[in-house]
Length: 500
Image (cartoon, rainbow, N blue to C red):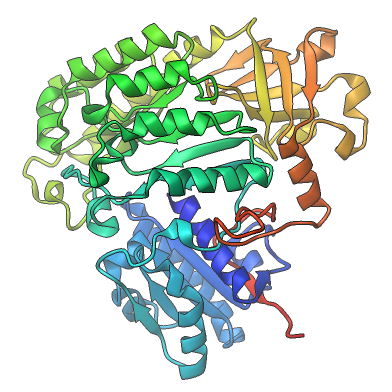
């Protein structure tokens, strides 16, 4: 969701006459910001260290502001929605603070701050403009996020999102499909449908089966090869969605299903309206219809009142679930959430010890599940860079259909070709898995004369056009398609476009 919002911010700024700073991609925050006229920080409030990171970054930027008083610093996103004017109180060198509900006002607020020479703080309590109607500068030319809803109607006691993002609001199916068609027309071959709780989609307009229908309709769009979605909620995950996943060829065999805890007692305290047996039943039904599905999850360790027995129940469910990977978190109290005021907060050393045990268990399972992929021949959608060692090993990296990270070895004759003659980001490579590790697969079959096939795609063409300097960009539904093939979005650092 934050990446999606950052793309909208970048699109709004470009639409208002800004261009990316020449120092974009320089590495550190200060190196990137040094060449910018405007720095925009899009924040998250899910984890405790988000606040520390924000104010640490703002502290670094203060010195830059002293040497360049014309530099503008804007803070948006969930933490801005939460702290509001407190950000300017703590960091008076910030020029603009805006929230999750009014991204569209960013350019106007920058101009007002510049004109009035005073900080501008503007937040809304409810969504005024659906973000997906705003201009965008997409991070990728070959894959796109498409929002189907914003906000959340759940009341999980640990989560600040409903307070900061508001109640769930659904887009109409026709609007979603129009945006998908637009990004496909611009070259994308993979789309991820995005929402805080995608499988409650449709409740707002009276159709509880709308998400399964949307999956099927999205899968029928010509030219779209891969459809993903995130994130569902176990309580609302229904058979019609599983059927749609299994029966729609372009819906990928991947599912992110947040567990949070394997203890029914803790789930009740979290206000998660499912229990471990239901959760495991969902996984069984998915695997019955989609045997090669890779299932990932989220887990919180050390929720208030969690006992050793509760934690063991989580380990048991993780063992039974065989997740391909897991996003694991040590519980941290978020101000404004009911869980922050619960008694029996688990001591940090106990949380850390349990977290280490969970991480070790999931590491073993991930290693075993990835080892089972050895010998399989997979289609890999090449990405710009998914691994730090790509240049050293001459491998390309990308994602298999089940979203596993795959590093693909290039045959010798191809490794020495010019960049545009090798497989490009957005192209598809078919290769056989030869080795594995807990967090990635290696497909070196082409190095030994084995399976290695390249299919050049429209997405690769779009990436090449962007690389060579051609792109378009507008709001969804406008004549030129609404999904730019422009360069990667960052969290800001644009510079003003020279006036003509």
